[in-house]
Length: 306
Image 1 (tube, rainbow, N blue to C red):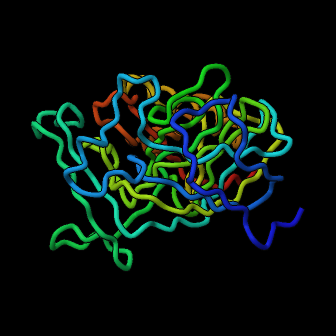
Image 2 (image 1 turned 90 degrees about the vertical axis):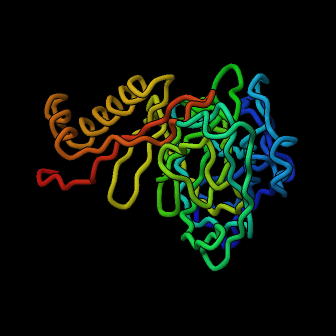
Image 3 (image 1 turned 60 degrees about the horizontal axis):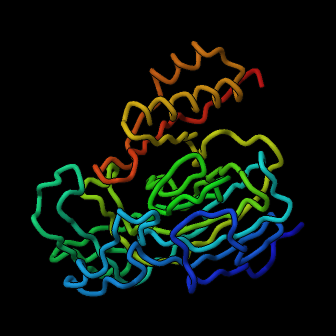
């Protein structure tokens, strides 16, 4: 089926705070297709002045904290459990301003401040204006997920369905492979950052609304246990858990399986290759109620026997 000349569009007029298989799709498409999705910032556009930082704060005592709003869901015709939805990011258009913040009890240095502090900044010609400094933007998507089976999951959290991955490689040019767990897949998207450092050490990237242009495709069968992604030169597996060690175990074992499948390697050979050329990196480890998230990167290599 040829791609439509004008992509589908989905507005952020009704966002959700839980990935829920019971939700009715806001858009249904036949893949392959392109779609432009509007997203809100992590506080739904309500933090407009530094003094709004306390009145707009979510409560993590709630089952579904009102943070990281997601636009969706988008249903893919014919998607069934065990299939894979691939979201190729074609473009990210940022709004003109956004914010970052620090709050007590969050971040690698949880005692940095004794009250929440927010900073509002403009973006002009691809540069974030941080006081007298000009910092080039590095847009990325924080939240992307399919609906989990069974009970809903909050958009602030992450797991086998995807979710709040906060991985810097979920950006323009990347292809994110998400397992389908329910009929239609039900894809959600949100929490774009103009930039975010690996680790997100304060618990906040530069939070901003955006429009994301994606190409969605469907592969029948082949779903893994966890989402993974690829860039032009890298294969990347993801893992999340309560501790760095547990999250690393997931990402490493996922890469082992991927390399063994793609290159007919033994497990020991794959493990050796990963140790000499792979990179284990932190996505998010900011001592918040959200699990630690890591990625394992391995370069795409040529198999002369294939």
